[in-house]
Structure formats: C-alpha cells, structure tokens
Image (tube, rainbow, N blue to C red; front, side, top):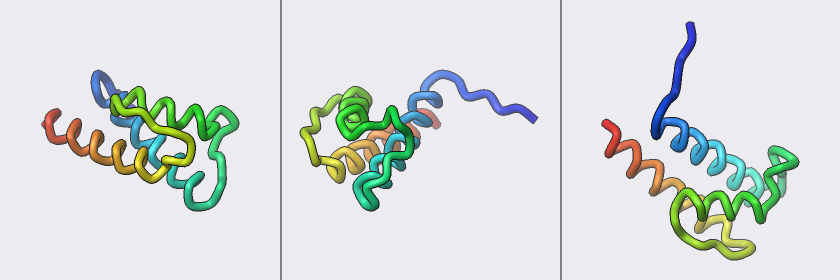
Amino acid sequence: MTTSITGNGIRIYQALVLKQALQAYDRFGVKVNTAYTPKAMLATAGHITGQTFKRGQYEQAIAALAQWIETQRSTNQ
C-alpha cells in the first residue's frame, strides 16, 4: 500500500520533522542529521513560520512550529 502526500501535506511533514529535530538538539544536544545544523534548523523554522530566530532560540522555534502545524491542520480539514 502506498500513501501519497501532496500539496500542503508536504510542508506540514517537513515542519513536523524539523520540530522533532529541534527538540532532540535542544534537549540532548543531538543532531539527527549532519545537514541539520542549529543555524540551518532555525533558518528553516523561520522560513516556514515567517518569524526570525536567533542563535539559541530553539524553544521559541519549536513553539512556533507547533502553532504553525496546528493552524495548517485546522485549515486543511
């Protein structure tokens, strides 16, 4: 069985994965991928949410992504 994700679902999935990666880095200091540097993760979170995050603002980025995800899920139903 194959599931296809299209449209805004791809962006929501990206935000979910990024949120989990930020949580892993913030809580344990673990990068889940070599491309997921703290600077790159915060920049991507800013691109998704439209906000700007400075170095060390992982909790703010996680909260903003969670809010963005919920907003997108509620508007897509």
